[in-house]
Length: 168
Image (tube, rainbow, N blue to C red; front, side):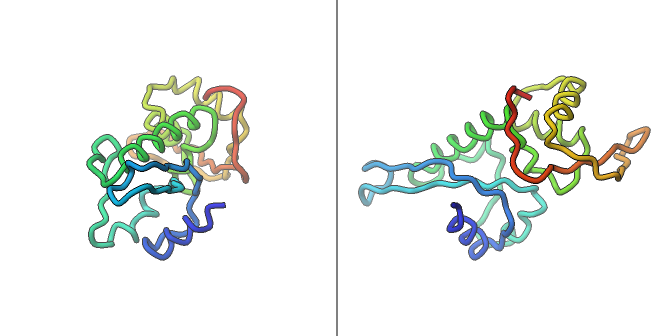
């Protein structure tokens, strides 16, 4: 599943090894002025640095989701559905962590969850909950962030996809 989406991302945008998930099927007579059409939409999550090959393609533009509008056909509503899926699923899974690189600090993970969920999360409760959920593993390495008094532990996602029984 998603092989075609991965192939298109690779051949047209030079992007490989991305998380890809089927979003939904969109169909109807009003989607395209040429007549009835159906599309199976996928979405992909990636750290921004991984998008660099695609950003060199003429005509391709990266915009914050809040200002991405005016796309052809019904693509605005498809984007809205993808954002809703990400926000909904982000509350009970490790999906937001796909925006981070292979290793990250708990502070970086916290920031990503706040952005994805579009809400403030208590940092202490968040740290406790993500450790309890068991979808992270320590790398044994540390990194000092600018302005930090001491280095932070680095984490990575455990193999497989994690879904939690409760909200983060």
